Length: 289
Image (cartoon, rainbow, N blue to C red; front, side, top):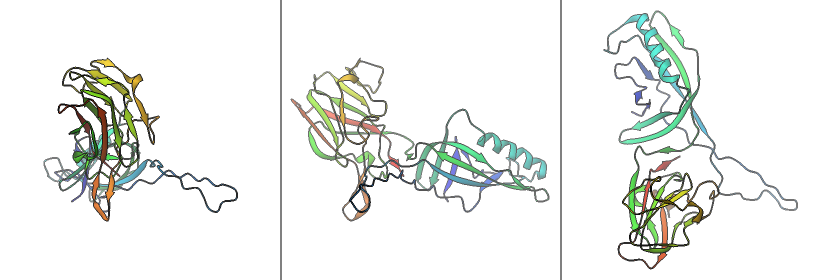
């Protein structure tokens, strides 16, 4: 049965102190931020592509009971205690909360805020109450719980990033590590044509770390993903493509021809003066609409 949790606290309580109402299950699909451009003398509108998605919100309808955490009937007094406990879960305002959506083996997470909670509808005699919390996902996309690392060639076309297969949303916060020797190393997202490259060389002892989200880059000489190590070379990075002024290299999944179950991120890597030791690695979490 699909369910949610907030900061690791299940909204279908194990002792049924509270539970999600039957209608609260599937997370919604985000809408697209519309842009309309009309030109005199031309019918209709100009086609605008690469539009961003809108922030999503969805309701969580909860039924609160008078059960104790041990699973016993605690009557109306316990209902009050359960409402207070649930209010503490839903009342976090000073930081984002981690919302986890689980459906069998499928687990998706997102940073969320609770923007509103309705006044509980209380049935005193039955020691039950009903309320609705409105959850907002500022970052739109749901993600895998943990990042995975993919390794590929530093000089090869149309390489599938197998660890990101199955994504339905773009990945804009990947960490990229290029191991030398390599001259003018470049990584291209095949779906959008976006690129990130450094017009310079890496020796066999050097690695180039690129943080696509923070738009930072460093040269290190150890086996690390630490963006505080090494030498800052952010100013030497060149990026092109959609959104490259705000985040580097949006890794975008493409649907296979006639097969919506085949969703893959393809990258093309180029560099000169490479050897068998040269490689590209991508550390990222999959993204979902």
